[in-house]
Image (tube, rainbow, N blue to C red; front, side, top):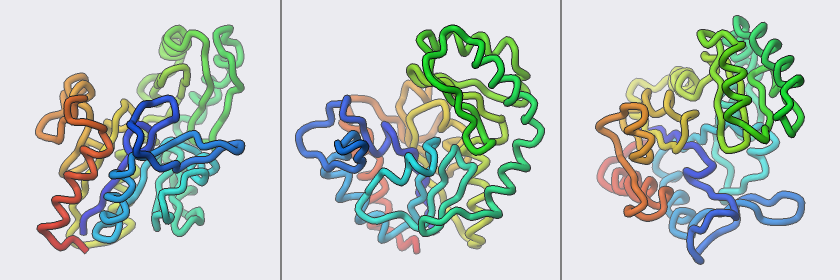
Length: 257
């Protein structure tokens, strides 16, 4: 069995703010307007791939944010909230979520402290969200300063602090995409599993490291010392097209399901 784990934003789908050419398919609608797109070729390739492998999106999006996305038909499985919640046929797996809460139990005090620090942060310009007891999220007018403040005050052995543009996250170390992929591999209970992972950000590093084959931007690979994977650069075209064309070629020569 081949399992294809993929981040969504800036990996398979792109905000309306990104130029991905004129041949696009709208895949996310919010407040009456389309806000995310796929390239037409990526949309078609993903449809073919999903008939040949087990496609499992892995995203930091919440359930509600994930449900806004329409990829043509819903994947059977999806890992959302950075892997803390497993959706199967659109329904939450309660036992998975309970196990996730146990994973972050030793970081509860740090999440509470992080929330207190963020409420006092003068750079914060958005509400502080505790996402299902799994991690914290907010936005900052000076995200670098907010991140530095949090890293000084929090126990880095128990939580990580991430910045993605103006967005700031405090995430328990055990609530990462790599751990979620390992848990999912046990969940499917297949004797022979080959995993491919694709992602574009720091959030995706643990997931990329657990896969037999990964695809990521060359700049990210160099920053984190990732080797022997599929290194993408802008000369290769749109990242999603690069990823999906390679997987499609793999599935044309080997029967994976």
